[in-house]
Length: 390
Image (cartoon, rainbow, N blue to C red; front, side):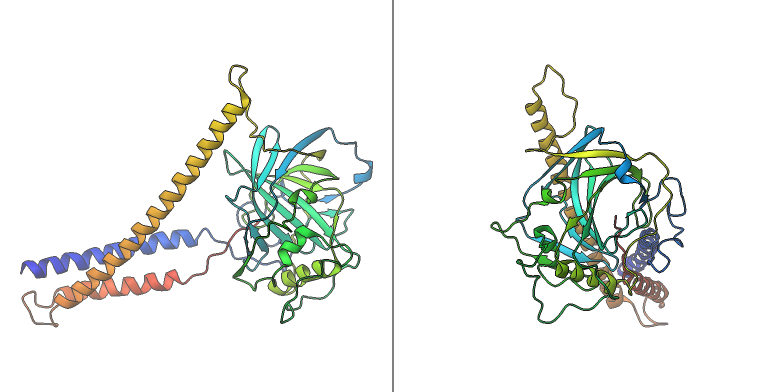
């Protein structure tokens, strides 16, 4: 009788646990967004996308007649010598640089760390209504909040790319380094065949030919304004610095990225319609630094390098703690799943046949409910997760 009682308790807990996990999973799914570029984002209603107060991208008019830069921002990047993962999430090609220490930007006395390089075709920002072939978004995150700073770098070539997108040739050959207009940073994105939607590739590092990301920023002025991310939820927490003049890449490099983006987006590309400019546009100059400035106001009584070192070590400890916490959470989730499976096996082993045994078959409905909950959980777990992009 005692064994039967514990079987009944375990089966009841399985039902409750399954219901809780299903509700939590459904809540997480509600945060995802399904969207495409068939209407250039004009039909997006999620988040702040329907707002027209501080949305991006925008069209710049009469840039040549604007006053010269009245302010500057500082940038510092390490050479891209480490292996990188490039992901195609069905909306963009994204190179992840998060937590790799490649540097960032000091803007308005705040430090923004480089997180991703996202690729858009055609360009999202326009100049006098004209698109350029590509636009690279260097996405940075502020050190003490979720605010973003995105450097938009338009890319052009001698020949404007054409067509709805074509698969990369097999076997794939990287664009020729001797081709006119060759760009070493863009080459990093096409060194291997661009991945298919929902796939990724790992680009090996190379200490000898490692490109300098700073070449994308140097030698130009930037148009700065307060805007939003250009994909749902269109969060209005983004500072944009848009390079005034495009960088040059080879015809093959540009065509390869153009084809990969258009092929992944059913021929639409991944550029949102320009939005009304809701605020002021200021022109900035870019200054390269040797080492990143954390943007703190140092006290005269405390040596700046010492305090910067403390802040950097504190940020590293926080990131290490976050990684440990994440690993612990994964372990607990795995343990929870194994306990559930063990309980189900135990319940099945001790459950008597219907209408027989000391419990008169009472545990059978609870066990059936638990199995049904587990089946629903498995179905819910098969839902795809969409990633956000800048």
